[in-house]
Length: 89
Image (cartoon, rainbow, N blue to C red; front, side, top):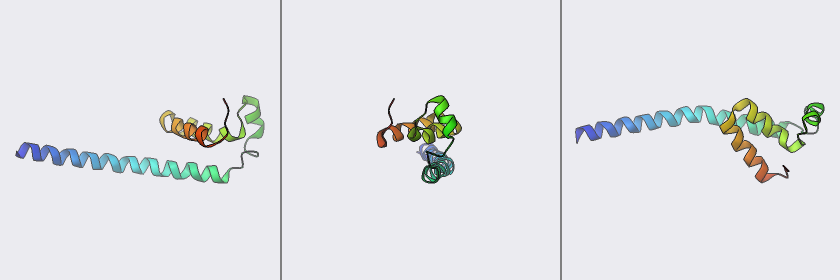
C-alpha cells in the first residue's frame, strides 16, 4: 500500500509540474497571438509579400503564427482561423 501511495504522489507531482510548464508556455503564446490579431491591420501588413505568395489578408496572421510558433500550435491557430473567418483554400 505504501508503494502505491508513493507512486500516486509522484504521479500527481509530475502531472502538476507538467501542467505548470505547459501553462507557462501556452498562455503567453495565446496572449501574443490575440494581441497580434487585434493590433495588425491585415490590409497594411506586408501587402507586397502577401500578394507575391498569394496569401489572403485573413490567412496571413495564422500563417505567420504557424511558422514562428511551430507546427502543433500553429495548426490549431490555422484551423481556428478557417472555422471562424471566411478563408478559402
